[in-house]
Amino acid sequence: PNLCLYLLLSGNIKCDLKLSNKEKAYTEGLNKLMPMPYETKADIKRLLSVSSEEITRDFLSLKNASDTPLNEVLENKEPYLIGHLKITGNDLIERGIKGEKIGEILSRLQQKVIEDPTFNTKAKLLNEIM
Image (cartoon, rainbow, N blue to C red; front, side, top):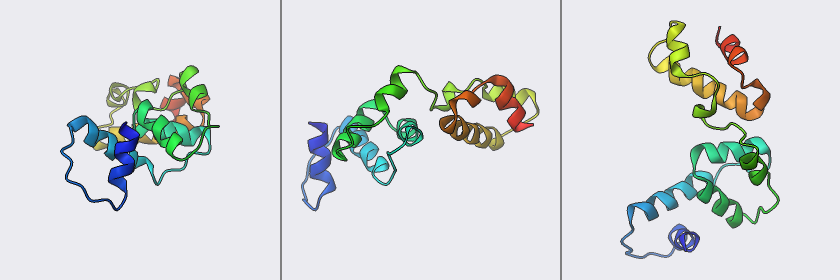
């Protein structure tokens, strides 16, 4: 049903639907994924990093992309979120890093770990920032 709602709203059809916050978030989530690639495992992890599993599944269905590594990524609990990193902002603060720089570094490390999950060790991540 949500996918149908998205298809209706993404076309040239004009309608005056009153959407719930959940429906608005769903359509916004799908729209955010539309320009993103979805061919590689890293691509799938990037989709998951900006959207929910449900929206990512619907996006892949909409793109007729049935043969993707999505299930493998989820079953293997591969890291794709900043929260999955083996370091936190506190580790960076302890090393004298402050303010917006913390988020920038964590985002950069997140992308590195998305590309190579074996990089997600505390030692490797901390070595990367020093």
